[in-house]
Length: 276
Image (cartoon, rainbow, N blue to C red; front, side, top):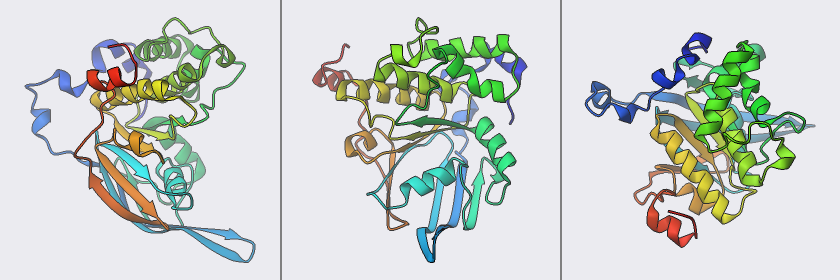
């Protein structure tokens, strides 16, 4: 489903978490895979050498799952993240994203899919230094061809949702690391994507700020988004409901997390010195 500017004029009444409808039949419907990967491979040519980064990945991720991807350096998790985010194409295999085969798409088609379906959050924030917070968040809507009034209204809305409604005119160098990551999360949410793909989102943050950021991801997941978190930190991965570990370009393990760590849990916040 593409971005429809008119819908966002009514976003406060239309974008409502699924759990706001406790008696709705939507809860009885089985979740469908938003990501289906079969025998995915990726080989890089480096001079006379072929380096196989992915050696045949099979992976399904359902709508509204919260998944952590883990693995040591060289495991293939960064390559898989690039493929999941439609930043690259596989050498072989099949990748279906939200019902569309993206395995062999051209660059312009992949760019459209990224803009419509995926919100990215990076370790280094990737904010434009000369742009205000509001302008950084609204940028994906510029690419989508949305009018200025609508994109600014939507950007203000998502900035409010991450607690930065009073920072719209600030530039990145006027914000703390945690605030910059909140801006990056707001930018990822502005197009209401099906998937949030976060690459080491707490890697540059202290423990207290990391927990605050993980609480935002919990809320995003609770609102119905699929969240895929790439991390090497076990304590961060434990916030996910499912943990997939890669090694040597293959899935080493894929398990349900039976002891989910919740950043919003009062006891957990107390231990981290956060306000309740």
